[in-house]
Length: 326
Image (cartoon, rainbow, N blue to C red; front, side, top):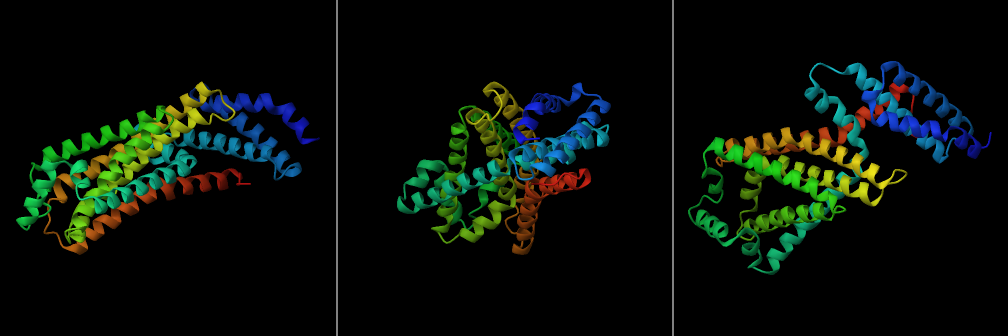
């Protein structure tokens, strides 16, 4: 059978199954199993006769998605929240690695711009950080305690205030994605330019290491999950600009749903970052080796959860189902 005839014969069925898999709650385990079996048969046929075609790629992705739904249904525990963080979210996040990389590159680029602008114009830091903050920091430097700002507030108050503010920033980065992603880019720019300016401010005074070892104790997780929240906004923006085979409304709805999941995934990490900033960062007398361990451990945690683990679950799912990338 020619590929065009094969597609024409099965297209309506595939579109129907794709829609059903988006709303798994309406399916019984038996229906889900039947869908998976049929898709597997179609994929096997397509692999045999059209091994390198777009049809095979499409069926490979659709069959893999069906298997993941089956696996998730089997593993569903009584604790829905734990299951979301351990299985449901990371098993889907592999689809958004490109948006995550783009969010990182945008943030890194604007951080460099912030640092360069501060080096070119001494007044730039004040315009970004504010005169009050700069003057206070200069006073702290003069008193030989440049990181004293992290000791001003009570531990619990600082923990709660920072955590709530960071979650607010993440939600804004996500919601601003409805402006075709431009609003999200603006949020990333704001935070990145501030970071670049802040770090250059200390570098210019010979305090780069002192500031970095202190700031990145909490900043490694905090900045990383702001970038992840930027990824959520870019997912929403992409759903508007590039709906693919879906209607723009359907694509937007899916983008909002997936973007919200990404934002929700950041909440535990913001809590960890808030705890570190409120209770640990203030210990400026901490030995360098301990600060380095916290920073490297934080980075490893982020990379594991948002990069390695989703790809590991994808590979595991395909190996178990016999579905392999084409």
